[in-house]
Amino acid sequence: MGKSPGIDALKGALILWVIIGHVAEVNHVQNIAFWIGSGIRMPLLVGVSGYLLNLERVRSAAFADLAGRYGRRLIFPWLVAAVVYLLLGGGSLDWWTPVSLFLRAPYHL
Image (cartoon, rainbow, N blue to C red):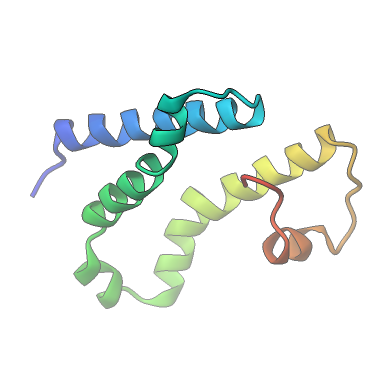
């Protein structure tokens, strides 16, 4: 089964909706549309992402393959974003920073 452009477009739109909603929350925008959207956008994004996950392929893959695949696509970009967030916020970096980021992730990361 190939990729569906419609599902990809929906996921892209949901990602943008989540980003816009988080920016509105940080800026304290008080609007009924943002209040209603906050209860819908994340569950929809998680649901669509779960729909796209091939559970049989994940279950049959070796842990090293999964760690390599998702490490490059998810964990490494998240770690870079968290370090940039810390540096822009005036945080300091040391040998404990990667562990600390996983145990106590910054707000919205």
